Image (cartoon, rainbow over all chains, first blue to last red; front, side, top):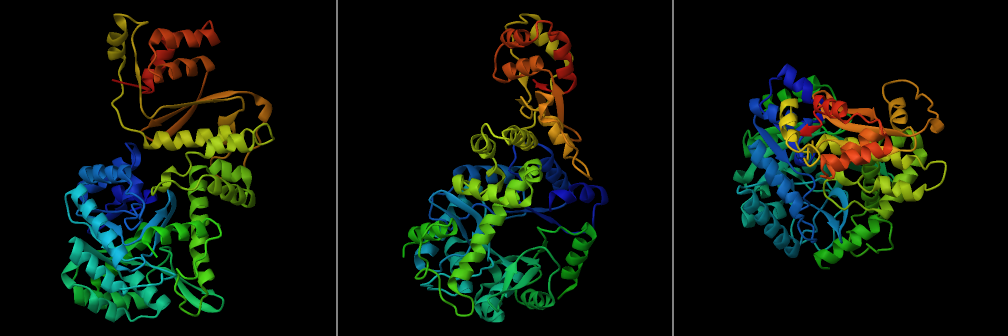
Length: 261
Length: 251
């Protein structure tokens, strides 16, 4: 759910099951955007998807950010609240990016404590999502999927499985996406994300960049079918955040996802 | 390496400081570590610049692409994003422009940016039911001069010695940007939220003084004094009526 589609969604009432909104886009005290989201919420279930809390950062948790998220959750009563398995700032300087976690026991302990704090503040279980990455930190003590599984087990959070990010990372870092699925606790996966990504070259080597600006590619559709067989038909979101297409294109992608499996 | 040390070093590197990442980022072969890090550094720059251009589209157009990119980078170095919510990156931009272009040909940039930021703030401010005329009467009848009127949270006021609203208007809509005579003089702008979006209107200097006084929680009498100091013929009753009609006050 992006602001340029607010009016059209409310006028045309497209035949989709639910909407997801970036939490931070509705942190305002008042005004047109939050009012539009409330009107959407009157008709559909809504999920809140945070991109800015950066739970994995060692810096202190931003209490004001947390307060605004809690306020928004009270106002919207979302079916799910999700954040990313990432960090984003250090020494007070923010990157406003979803930076990959160094997969160590130390970072896991830190993330588990932060996720627990978030769940306590919101009074509910949250979903944590795997991110795309273009590098890995040294000293990893877990595989990426193993890290997610341990996070879910130790914090009691659920998982938002971004199938595109699994595919992007499998290609970027050379692992097998199906084995990744094997390591995840099936009952913990409560939502899927699908998105388009860009294939580019750096110094003659291919790398895939998570861009959310195009259609889902065939390989990701195939992987999604496999994920759906393993984890069940949990709600699926088409993420499209840049070079926004028509609402019809988005609805068609959502219907394609529904028809699979 | 401890999590906090690793993160500080990585962020320092992204912000262009000499912070060695060779033992921090795994050498996966194929793409060099420095090139992998460069993807994130590029995201940091372009993401910030994009967010700034969305908040200050007129400044971005006035600058042109190449100059705006340079300006955004300088500003980012001076004021790194201090919040996980990108909506705040522009907050220090108007004062930064004021200091950066002080006294030069681009001195008016700061006032245009102030107006653009006022729009952003007006869009995000709290909702409040507007005050109606009958209530205003009851409010002020007993002791008009000593009463206080609450200005709606979404009202913003900005004045400039340049024609800032004319400059802003010249950049709206499709087609060529119309030229604006910078010597055309001062403009005071009222920014408010209406059902159909954020509206910008020219107001007189006296009206701005009245509203600014009320916004600072001064009494109507004190705010009126500031207004007639600018324009001795200022008609406060007519001005208050106009304000109520536009929903500028709340209960």
